[in-house]
Image (cartoon, rainbow, N blue to C red; front, side, top):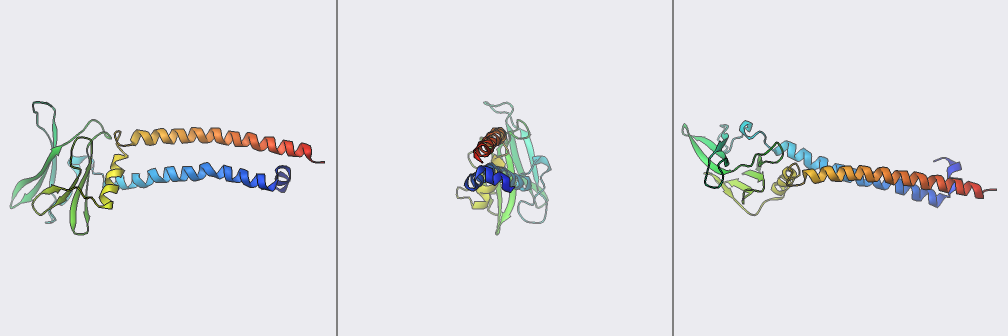
Length: 204
């Protein structure tokens, strides 16, 4: 920083202004880093479109099949089900049948498959199904209520991409941060100019 500016404003005031300038930078780095981190996890694990997901459910080396079917019932004539089949002894066997929400690309049932340790797992995010975490028990997917850190992280990442789980909130927070930062820096600029001119007026 130029010495003339330091002389005009004072060293302590100058340091305070530099710190004030850096605060939004630090906050912005945290906010956008947070969104980028979970966005990358969702991009890695969120399997969409579901019909194109290719995954070996039971670990036998054969890619198994996921399908979406409409199964009308008394309460919902457009009830959509996510059904997972494995290939076993030359025939298809259903190993999971759950409700599938599909309104648009974000407001939907998010699906993630991965292997953790020796366990083959399925994690979903939506607001329709009671069970969100499943593991392969050798015969079918079983729900469980004691998810690992990886499972909860993947589900949170998928939730943040959904309108019901934080997608809109992230956008609003980002816009609010940008708008607030602009006003904040304008105020710093005005304060800095006022300090510089007032100090200069006092100098002999």
